[in-house]
Length: 221
Image 1: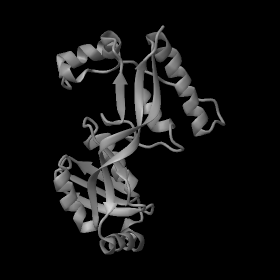
Image 2 (image 1 turned 135 degrees about the vertical axis):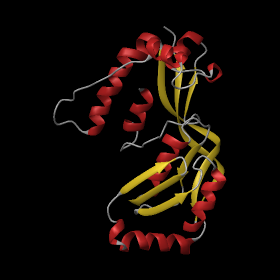
Image 3 (image 1 turned 30 degrees about the vertical axis):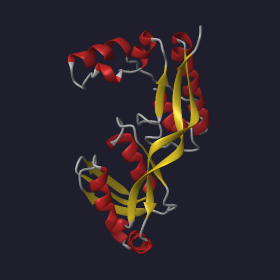
Image 4 (image 1 turned 45 degrees about the horizontal axis):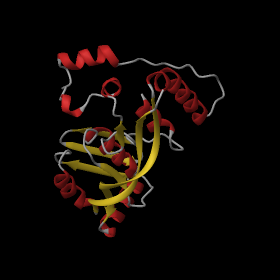
């Protein structure tokens, strides 16, 4: 719930996957009981669809719904969500959540490595009438987007393909205009993604960066 709020409300506009990877949200909570209420510990190795997962959901999952007053901005709506989450969960359970800047050595940065190839796909996306309508589809072995910015691709890497990995993907291309991509490869394999991106003059490279991390901390009660 908190990750949803921060994905949707922390920045000026919603950023899908902003705090979804293991590297972009951390739990600094010593109390094992509290930690178990907030997340499934990695060492528990609970798999989706198992009896253990069902038991955890039955014990700890919650439902939340809000009906907004009319006339509110998106930021004002998200502020109400944050107030509800703190009132119902953080304060009673004894934890806090906030975004902190931290150094991460496993950042994967999308960069331009061949300006001629990038110029070609940029012109193609702009001039081809079939690509003027935004669209996207993906599965384990393919990714395709039409007339969408590259940060859409980055968001899907963070939110879907690498959600459970200690990697954070960032866009360092400085390309804001819509671009079309068609990748046919194992999308969980960085080397294969880079081989597919080479056609477009783009590459993912590892670097050490300062990133925003959603930090959950225990608060004394």
